[in-house]
Image 1 (cartoon, one colour):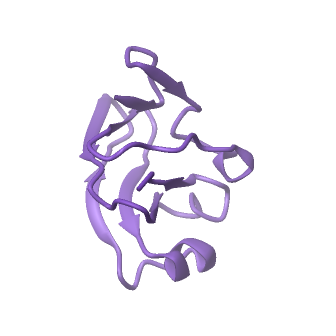
Image 2 (cartoon, rainbow, N blue to C red):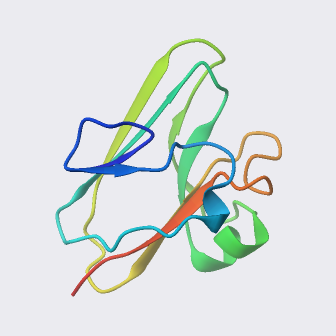
Length: 108
């Protein structure tokens, strides 16, 4: 498992929060599980395409989860996009423009 915002997996990843655009994501393996976590923050997790990721639009986005201000949120995504780059972002307010987005390359 690859944890985004948690530390209980095989690999710990930067928190699902502001500033991820400057963070270098690890290469994923097919069937890895991405685990997005956050606490007491209003964020979401959407799988987006490259154009939506770059422009911070959500025209072709697939919503995976939306949090509320209070609570603990966990979203698990099994990696199936072999040999591709996959993109995730939050569409709450200005989250994406403030860096709550991450791109991962999946090994062949």
